[in-house]
Length: 154
Image (cartoon, rainbow, N blue to C red; front, side, top):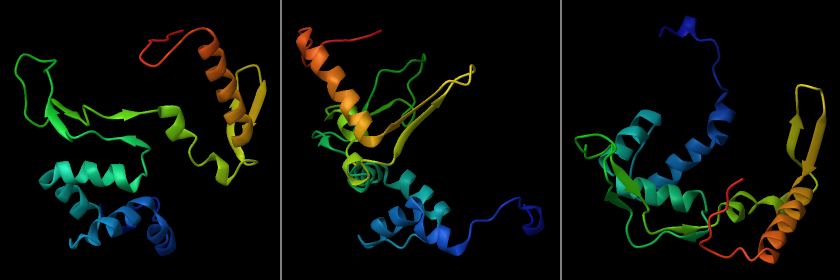
């Protein structure tokens, strides 16, 4: 694409503050010399286990990653393909709600959810309200006898 055909170009400050730029810097602190997204992409292909370990660390995932980073999973197709049919962190144990709400305490009164439907009905939740609602549902599930490992679907 020629320069004149670009619809939008981020500012230098926006690029510098972008999470992907911060991630590249995180990788480079370990002795690599990635210059841009193309370098990161190639590095992720060449060092895929390390890439996913670093994503886990960089994103501050709360939980246990387990001992195994990747394993060959059962193929959904007739012929397994090495890099397509992988299972990442097969022994990991994480709580999705805990991870999604882990930064809520930093901005408890800021907007977390804005809902609006086709009838123009609106509902908003701050991070604190969202945490309170999640806590209420968690307690209700416990009161119903739901425990770790149970499958809940609605």
